Length: 272
Image (tube, rainbow, N blue to C red):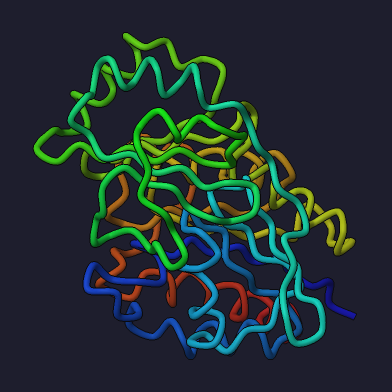
C-alpha cells in the first residue's frame, strides 16, 4: 500500500491570486492528490474565520487546519470545529515597543478564544465579532497573534523597526507590504504541522508543503529536515526560495497545480 502524504498549503499567493480567485488548475490538482489517498490541509497566517471557506472551495475535509501562523490549530469534530491547540503570549512588551516606534500604525490582536480586538478598522482584516478598543486595551490578556499594519511604509522600514525594537522573545514575519505578523516565540507553521503529522501518524518523509512568504520559511525547514518536500512559489522572495529548495511557477501561472501534480505523477511512475 502506498504511504499517504500530508500536504500543507499556504493560502495567499499559493492557492489564491491577489484578487482572491483560485490559482489556475488548483482545484483539479488538489482533487487528484486527495483522491490518491493523501491528506490535504491548509497552513496559513489567516485566522480561522478567514480560512474555513477555502476548505469547501477546494473540496477537502482534513481533520486539522493550521491557522494564525501556527498559533492556532483547528480540529474537525463531527459537523463542526474546535480550537484544538492554541498558543498564546503576553503582548504588552511587544506592543509597548512597537507603539513607541509606530504610533500611527493600525494594530490588531487575536485572543486565545479567537476574538479579535483592533485599534482601527482595515478592509483586509476579517473582523466578524471583533471589537474596536483603545491601544492600551490590546494588552489586557494573552493573545495568540499581533498584527501591525503601517500604510505607506515598506519592508525595509519594518525590518529596521523590528531590529531596533529587539523583538527576540516572539516569532515574526514581515509581509509583502508593511504588514508585521507576530506569534509566540518558537511558534510557526512548521511547529503546528509537526503536531498534526504526529497525531495523524504520517511518516516524516511524506510531508509536502507549499508557500510564498517569509512566514513559510519555518514550515519549509521542518519539511526538509524530515526528508519531505518544500516548494516555493515562483514569485516568492529569494530567501523564501532558498529555504524551500524547490521552486515552481508563479501563482498566476498555476504553479501550485504543477507542484501538486508532480506528487501524483511520481506515484504513477513508480507503479508503472
